[in-house]
Length: 487
Image 1: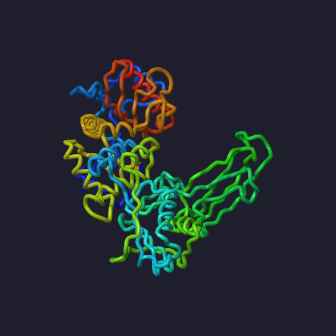
Image 2: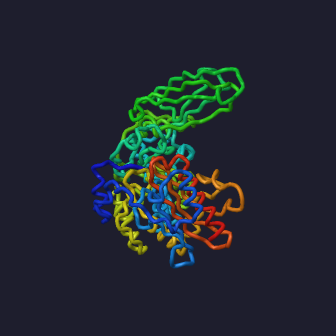
Image 3: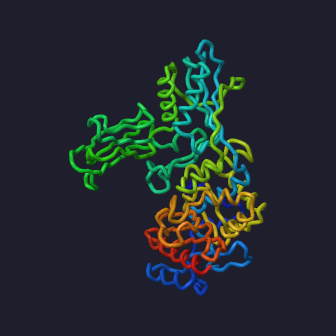
């Protein structure tokens, strides 16, 4: 899920050939005939005081040429995080399930007696899940090469992606939330700062952050109490002041019992290059290394010898992480990679959209008036119809990567964002559904194995005021229960 700048919306529409009208607010829904809706769905809509005219459904057996339910199938809806299905299927086709991202380490010169006489370069290629553990592995490998001292600076090269034109607070004015993190070709820990609360220690040491960034202030105003750990004694409050500035401030306050277990929270704060460098500096120096300089942005210099390459886990594993827990920045990183790999760096959303347009045509998908921007679904302008998603999922069923796509989807009552839904009765485990939620949007799409043994593609897109507050979920579950019993 994501949002682009208003100035770029028209460019997206032209690039996709989807028409400028698709970027404008949707007209009021005309009264919709709901004769195709199961009675259970109509009853739940009435119970939740929601309108059938704001709901789009597409249900079709994978072995059928005609839909079982086609309710407003050609009406564009905001799909929220269901858009990640497009990123999933397109990336498997374009990049391949075994695609790996690399992070490369160069230097001005090879180490002599453990010393690099000059700068060290770290170049990222958009790894969506480069973790502190991976950086630790890089540090150990440098140690194995005998590197003990870097006499110059650490140059961070993130030129594989163009700089993102946007502010993390654009979407909902919450720039400190991880779901709003912006992509970057050299990204550590999804751009998140880990805030650890350990109430068993002293008052001063009860709060710590990673990476240990000296440019960010940590204000520990936590009130530790000697009482049983209950809801009223486990209420930490985390405030991020100036989260988009390098000198962001983290304030932790509230009341926490010393009997409560340690807990970790994640926020976006400060400069991502600062975070990357200080994490590397800390890990490198903890192994006995020394860095004389600081960090700066730059490009790997021509002729610089490569010291090592870190390879990521394969794309198929990353798609599993992305879809199960609906990780926005991972989706954006993958989307940008598609554009950079096919059309050349630097990766941009516009290049990626062009590739998606060509990919959809190659799959014989009719995506007239569709709007695909950043591939995550965190967007107010993204649009797809139930039929467009349904046709894509039907094509997935017949594709070589069907198993890879299915494995990424949350399973009803078992895991991911569906773990607490449909968790009782025979239906549990029979629906693989990618969920999506925004303000006034509740969406879901995937596959259902009915009690009869027949498999169905299911698309549920609901755009209505307040639909995200539970009512939309109940309507969806009514449909899935009905389909399980009657499909």
